[in-house]
Image (cartoon, rainbow, N blue to C red):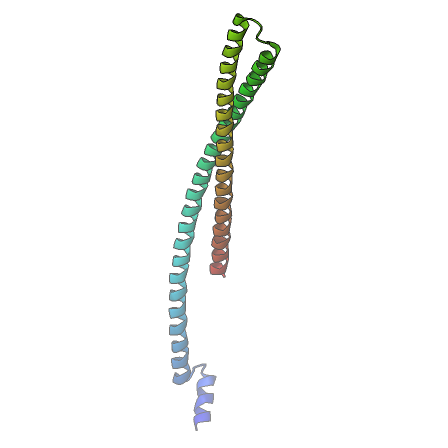
Amino acid sequence: MKTAFKSLLAAARLAPSSQIDHLHGDLRRAEAKVAQLERDLELVRADAQSWKRRHEDASEAISGWKQAFQRTQAAAEQAQAHANRFKSEFERAQTELEREKPRTEGSRQRAETLKTELQEMRARAEQAQRAAELANEQLMAMEVKLDLIEAAIQVLDLRTREQAVSSSR
């Protein structure tokens, strides 16, 4: 009798109530899953926006660091040129001192003056050399920092792209 009833329902294009109940349960589960996926999608979008803001902030920081790097590099080059100028003056004074052999009292005084001048130039040249070395060290440290920040940005960008791709599936 059950089979006859099912065939009568099938002929009228109707479904049994158990099948309808089962389909309603499937529909509720699908709707719940869709709602959960929409919530997850919103979280991923918010996270992507957060990463984009971080990326922009880091890019601005890198831009500032690059400008500082360029200023430091220019200062280092200036210090090196300054050191080179003092070195050439020092060498010129030393050569002049060696040529001048103190023979008389006047030449001895000149030699003492040149010697004092030479010592002052030597001190300034050493100071300029130290300044150039310090600037170069700072320059290298800033370069390393820039490389690290750039690598971190690339990793974050890659992660954000992977999340965007996985959430769109």
